[in-house]
Amino acid sequence: MDAIEIQGGRPLKGEVTVSGSKNATLPQIAAALLAPGPSIFHNTPDLADVRTMGRLIAHLGAKVSRGAEVGPHTLRVDASELPRPEAPYDLVRTMRAAVLVLGPLVARMGRARVSLPGGCAIGARPIDQHLKGLSALGAQIELSHGYVEAKAKRLRGAKVLFDLPTVTGTENLMMAAALADGRTVLENSAREPEVCALAKVLVRMGARVEGAGTSVVTIEGVRELKPVEVDVIPDRIEAGTLLCAALVTGGDVLVKGALEDDLDAALGKLREAGATITSEPGGLRLKAPARPEAVDFITAPFPGFPTDLQAQLMACLSVARGASRVVETVFENRFMHVQELRRMGAEIIVDGGHTAVVRGVERLSGAGVMATDLRASASLVLAGLRAEGTTVVHRVYHLDRGYEALENKLLGLGARIRRIRAPGP
Ligand code: EPZ
Image 1: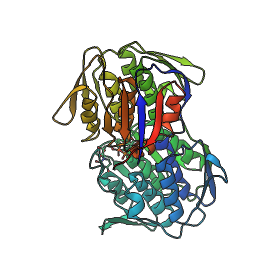
Image 2: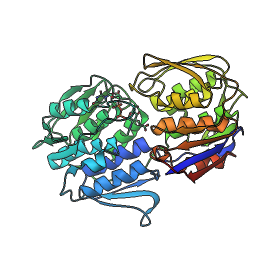
Image 3: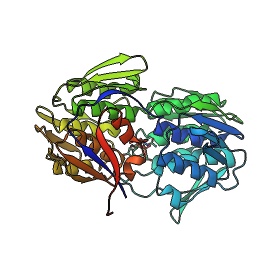
Image 4: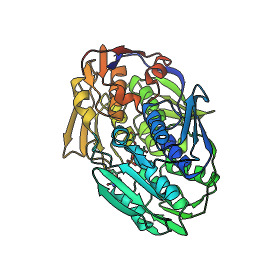
């Protein structure tokens, strides 16, 4: 089992380039199912989740090539034939974003059988909103033996009011509505940049989508879509994670690919914590004080502070001057990094499951810690970069789901970090 070993205490310096966005790549690969013919995606990150999505698309019968044939960050999907519109449990259980094939398959093939995603470390994460939307568009939905079966001769446009903004729910319904008969209006839609990126790809495929990025998205269905060639946008969560790495180490780092508009709320909180953030050609530079200032923040759907950066900013605040109040409103169990940070000397109290108070300490001490989910593992790496002595983060397969060779990126900024084989679970 791989682990990451870090000797902390060195401020990061230099420049680093973020990879393509995982959460933009996954829905866009699914969108390729909507059109017969080869779609090509450049700048995709070489990550476990993207490889899993490629395996799933191939299982459906599409021809998928990546790496050697087309280059390490290019993925080619030819969805001319989809003889097996079924997403099996052994693929879905490792990556809940597999649910993103549901909308495209029902829209293109008239049927789909997708394993229900099980629970997840950070929360129940049901897909009731996805199913509510698809049945509003006329799909017959049946749940049996842990699978959802959806059928429709042809989906028809409808109004869908989401109970709450859901990123993949909005994406699934945008894709389904693209081939439906008539107009679909999605209300209370998610506004994340990845939703906007998908809408742009769908429009380039011939779909008629308006309003993406606002809470009301309107889609006029068309009969057929055509394949597309895409450059995937940079990963804003990786960019935010790298900016947090500069802050927690008191460093000075240029993060190339970081886009100001996609990170507004996060940048505001990093600046409140004492960071100086300036735009430079192709990215954002963060110059950090020796020690951050305490900051209160609340996670929320875009444009609020992203839940996917909560654990990373908390790692920075664990050494801040003063006490910070962190409220996690999106997922019900996204404080699992707290216990591990406390092992490193952080003083954090969680009350009621959604609120944590972080009393900043002068120093953290390196320790063996356990990653529990993707962003929690990033948080532990960041804490290790600051801590005195050696930190070993175990179960880094969590990290590999969402970060492409993060340790190499940090090494390039002067971190003393390496991947090791560690015994044990
Ligand atoms: C997307 O997940 C991201 N994943 C997540 O990133 C991210 O944390 C999340 O959006 C929130 O920003 C991808 O884009 C692949 P949601 P998603 O549906 O779409 C509840 C990472 O770290 N909900 O917006 O699954 C849900 O339980 C990952 O890269 C329902 O109740 O999140 C949650 O509490 C982690 N019913 C809230 O809505 C539904 O049908 C927001 O979830 C759907 C969601």
